[in-house]
Image (tube, rainbow, N blue to C red; front, side, top):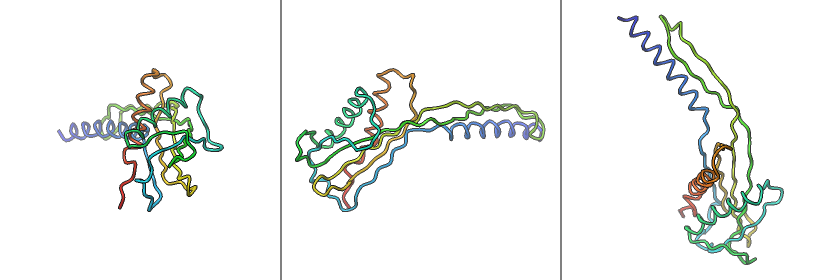
Length: 182
């Protein structure tokens, strides 16, 4: 009886270990933000898109999609886009794409005294995209807010799915914008 319990525990334990390792290595959407302490965000009502010098920019189609997604989120925050040089905020972004190796491990079985089980691991390459969004106060020429959204990218997704993922990421990125005053 004890041997059966040990064998069952071994099987469950090995399967759980492999499942935890596999899930820990799967990269999910990650968002970080930061803002300049003491900034009064209530004074910002308009913004203008600017190009960050030296930043990596996507093609024109993706550029338009990113800006539209961010425009939609900023509009919900009460900000109005303008082309006027007198904008309250300058907004710019940059993107990067990295290739990372993902390991998928599977296990089953487990004989007496933890032996006899089978396990296998496979690797695959995944694409990870990062979008960094920066906001500058043009009067002080200072960065006042920055945020980054990182997510695995599936190049096989439909255009609709890619747009949905982008919109979701920008909503999450700008969820707590403007930062609460202390």
